[in-house]
Structure formats: C-alpha cells, structure tokens
Length: 300
Image 1 (cartoon, rainbow, N blue to C red):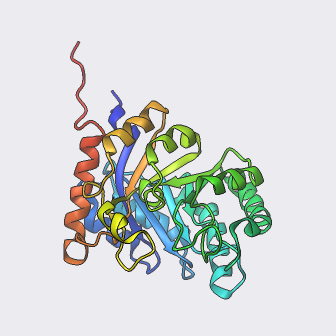
Image 2 (cartoon, rainbow, N blue to C red):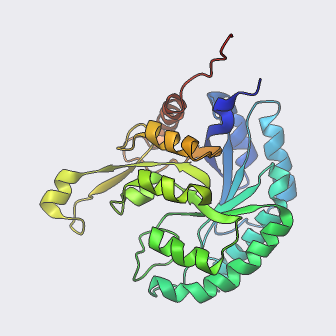
C-alpha cells in the first residue's frame, strides 16, 4: 500500500550555486530527509544542469527521496549583468527540471528596483508571460517565494510576491494555472499576517512550501514598535517558532494539498553555524510529528 503520509514529504534546501549539490545530498541523505530542493543564488555559474540533475539523483540512489522543486533566486526583471544571469538561470532550470525529477521551479518574481510595487507589474507581465509559456511547454510549474527581502509596498530590490494584495495583482497579470506560490508562514508573520486563513484562501496556488517559522516578540512590539532598534520578529527553524505546524499541515491536507515541505535553514539566530544541522534535524522530526507521525496501516 502506498504510504499516504508521504503525500506530504519533509526535506531541506541544498545550495547548488557552488557545484557541490550532489556531494551535499550524499552527506545528509541518511539523516531522514524525504526531499531536497537544490537552489541557485542569482546565477547557475555556467553549470551543466543536465549533468547536475543526474549527479543529484545518483547521490540519492535507491533511497525514498524526491526532488520536486529546484530554486532560482535573483531579480530577473532588471537588466544588470547578474539579473540577466538570473533570467537565463530561470530558463535553464525550466528546461532541465526533469533531469532532477522536478516538476516545479521556484524563486523570486524580481522587481523594478526602488519603485512602488505596482510599477513592476508591466515588466512582470512581460517576463513571466514568456517564462510561463516556456514552463507550460515543459510541464513545469512556477512558484514564487513570499519573501519581501527587506522590501515593502513602496520600495524594494528583489520580489513583489510577498503580500496577498500583490498576489491578486500578479495573478491577474498571469492567470495561468501553473504559476503560483512557494509559501511559508514565516514571511507572512513578519507582516503580522495570520498564515492559517491564508492557506484556506490560497491553497490552490501553493505549489511548494518552505519549512521556516518565526517568533514574534510581542513584548518588543508593545514597548518599541516594529520600526525601532530592537528586532520584533525572529526567523526560526520549525519547532522553535510560534507556528502550530500541526494546524498548518492539517489545513493543507484539508485543501487536498500534496507536495514537499523543504526546510529553509541558515536563518535561526540560535540553531545556526555549529548547531545548524542539529536544528534542521529537530525541525525535520518535528514536522514529521506534525504530519501525524509514523503511518500505521489499519489491520482490518
């Protein structure tokens, strides 16, 4: 019998920018991760993605581990040299996703730098209509991460897909069924948005989930507000933050969602550096428990 618990897998992100993705997968594949998301930062550095995908799958071997999504993070809407490399990286990832076994490519929308968010929409429509057609031809979904990258409605450098009001505008420009979100509760909590009702409204557009959480420091907000010198929110590895991932996964299941929750590490202020993998494996086991724990077959 197919294990229905694995309709939602729990894994982690793997940096692919430096050419060590396959090696890294081999190092941590036996720690219990059920999926990996190899990702690039701004550029693929000229890597042969056909070969990289093959090596990543070879590193997984016969383990029950999948790669559903690969990431390409940068600003494909602007035209500086690295931006153009990001745009080319999106094309290459879309064209080569199948070599990884992936059916989704995720990253930032990009943004017209320093301008109010709506001023990015014409450029967004131009770039993503073309990339959307390319992805459709390859049977690939596109998922936008909901990270503001320190931007807001008035200005920013990287991404417009960080707010549900922006999603309404974006998906009006690109109404394609295969263009959606790489969602996580953390980036909504940074805006003091409750993530649970958001799942109920947007589940059909959530193609991939990042395992990242947040701790909202309400005492800091009450004393200093959100624009003072004290941090009012901390990004956390799941299991250390405020989110109830049992409720999050339950809402995803109720919506009929299936896919991977890949932990995005390197942000927790406590479980980082020497404690990075300790925190990630804790998050992995925590999310598995929130998923319902070990699947038990009814003997009847």
